[in-house]
Length: 349
Image (cartoon, rainbow, N blue to C red; front, top):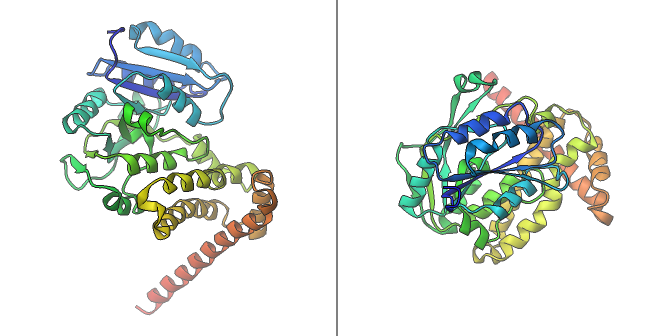
């Protein structure tokens, strides 16, 4: 089987995950679909993650490939792209380095993709858990929803899919998508080296896929970690580093997004739809800034943005920083007015 082309390439970006990576490895090793390759791309871990994975290589009989990045990339994007570049499977499945999958996950997803000749199979449900070892599997809680227990097909063009995307119908997590490798390669769909890279990647997958399948299979177990990057950022006070993490996707991702939409007839000559995409992406970030930093003075947000992106924004650093800070101020005002309106309604009942 080692010389046979795998049906599925499981790609995992890894960084300092010595506490959890063994559980992921074990969950892939016991898959009912045995013709897979597990590609783990180490982003220059400083703990024992690399050594732990290396010790498990013999168990996989050639199906585990351990790659090390030349230098730390600072996020999962470039390691994922590297994994895709060297993958050989007909389908690829991305996992986070601290999660796990059910023992029939690859078989369920592969069978669905083959049956419907799908570009992408999207899971609308998954499980979340906490704890380590056996406790991780004992604490699972189902999340997500689907109207039926049947597999649903979305075969229409962008006119059909676009409203669903605006309503956040498609969860952006890469680990909920089982994708045909040639589809990604032919369309040059890669992860951008920005924070929340999954939003851009998912948008491109949805826009360019001709046949999408929504499956009720619950295949993935996501770990809810208090020390995750997202949770750490939420707990961080108003600092340049914290602000940069979230605004990075707007400052450095929107030009890519604009260029991408400019190549598609659906968006090319429709400024209303293009604006709707920018507005949707921007509001996610602006709402996050309000939620985390809403109690701080608006001028502090302005100053930190200006400092964080002084090189990227050039002569427009003051203008862009002001516009973003002002948008957060508007959200703050609208939240306050909404609260006052709800209070008035209760008083009049």
